[in-house]
Image 1 (cartoon, one colour):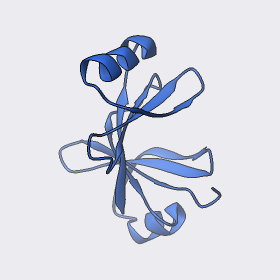
Image 2 (tube, rainbow, N blue to C red; image 1 turned 180 degrees about the horizontal axis):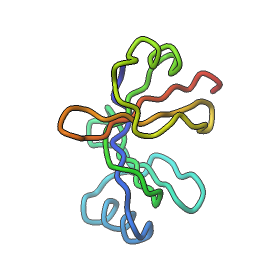
Image 3 (tube, one colour; image 1 turned 30 degrees about the vertical axis):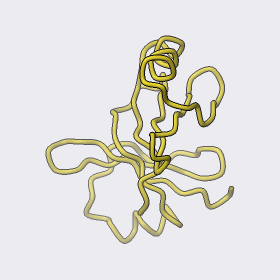
Image 4 (cartoon, rainbow, N blue to C red; image 1 turned 120 degrees about the vertical axis):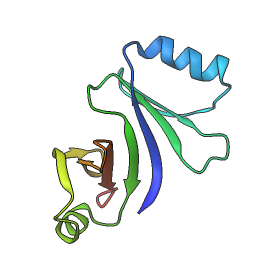
Length: 109
């Protein structure tokens, strides 16, 4: 597992982009349609993903194969069923304390 994103839901994409770019000085990494923008963290080890989608905030970890990871970690509570993303799939899970985290793959990228 490699931390690649910190997912942060937001209400207004334009305001969030302006804040992270202008006030925090983060560099934009990519955009996906009108709902999602990612910024590099200062050390470029991961990205902050801002999105208007309504899911809980949390870290996103890249794995080689999401299905294999889920099979091997069957005792981890699934909070968001697996769904397709460009080049792969992602699912959401609940950690102790109720915090969300996501695991995804890019098997088809």
